[in-house]
Length: 348
Ligand code: NAD
Ligand code: ZN
Ligand code: ZN
Image (cartoon, rainbow, N blue to C red; front, side):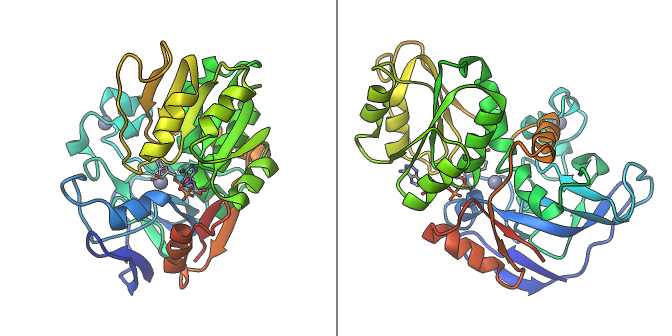
């Protein structure tokens, strides 16, 4: 079968022929129906190495996956051949207290996981391929009949990550609240919909690209602003001088973090999602009084079930640009160029 593989750090991925996997006891092989191309894969290709991550290439890219069960190993009874499923991507040990709660992102026994701190497409083989090996059936969530795997795939990260981030700040997203979404790409355009579907807060979307701001309005943003050095001041003007109750930064550069700090209302939340690697000073006066600064990482399995529920009911949907497996490397070229609308999804 064909697979798009990252062969070494600081390199571009290549489409190569590899053996089709076979499931061992407790394992499942799925036929890929869709695999999302995440901006994090660009960080994997260009910014990271073994000093940052506990695992290394070669592996097949693609950590946002859904498809149909192709074959099951001995002892698997929760799914059967032909079932359509979404893959919960963060793979922990399944036994520690965090994993028992379904928060495998924060597994406290990573040496007991299929790979320490990783998953399929993150150290182990991912879904930009014809088939993918899933190490345990507990990582599979059955799809509602109205959710095609190609539609569900991007939800497993591009929607799950912002859902987790939004959920953490729900208490600050009341009817009078303003939420700022910085960066309207794969994750940001889902964040806007998740906020609108689950709260009554006003959403201001920020991006330098007119195409992204147009998408923001289409998916429900109340207002859009071009990203520049004046954006934080404009957010204050639009909020009677108060600032935004919650700022979600899907970029994470120094410029966007400074914007987030300057735009946040007292008692507000600034949540860093993007991994651009920016850093800003943190001191008593570097933001308004009682502003919380926090990072956030992916999401839990129960949250993914809730995300799929929202999608199945038509309350959120991933805008996506489709690529064939042959053109999968092109998806990343377009992601770098900033020409992808919503999420790039590879459909073998
Ligand atoms: P994307 O490329 O689809 O979207 C990024 C968007 O940010 C684009 O629309 C771009 O125009 C916009 N942008 C760039 N510079 C900006 C600026 N200065 N101000 C405002 N907007 C700006 O990326 P994505 O796949 O949505 O991922 C976003 C970030 O989140 C990446 O850094 C990715 O690695 C990270 N990520 C984090 C997690 C997590 O768990 N924390 C999970 C998935 C992705
Ligand atoms: Zn991702
Ligand atoms: Zn664990």
